[in-house]
Amino acid sequence: MATCKACGKRGFFIKVNREGVCGKCVSAAGQEKEEKLLKLIESIETESKAVEWGVAPWPYEQLADMYRDKRESRKEVAVLERFAAQKYAPGPQALQLLDRLKQAK
Ligand SMILES: [Zn+2]
Image (cartoon, rainbow, N blue to C red; front, side):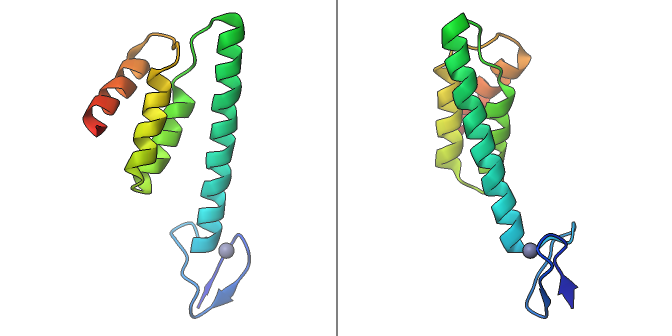
C-alpha cells in the first residue's frame, strides 16, 4: 500500500512516483511551477522594456521543457515564439532556443 509523501493520502488505489508523491500532488506542483515561471517571464519582459536589457533565456527554456514533458507541443512552441519576439541577450542558450523553435514548428 502506497502513501503520498506530500498529501499523506494512502490506499491501494494511490499511485506514487519514484519520489513517493501521488499524481494529484505532482500535477499541482507542476501547475505552481508553471505559474511562477509565467510571472517571472512577465516581469523580466517588463524590465527589459524599461532598461533595454535583453531577456534571459532560462525561464523560457524551463517552461518549454515542462510543456515538452507534458507533450503540450502547442504551448511549447508558443513559449519559444514568445522568447524569439523579445529582445534577448545573445549567447549559446538563446541560439539553442531559436533552433528548437525551428525544429518544433
Ligand atoms: Zn498526494
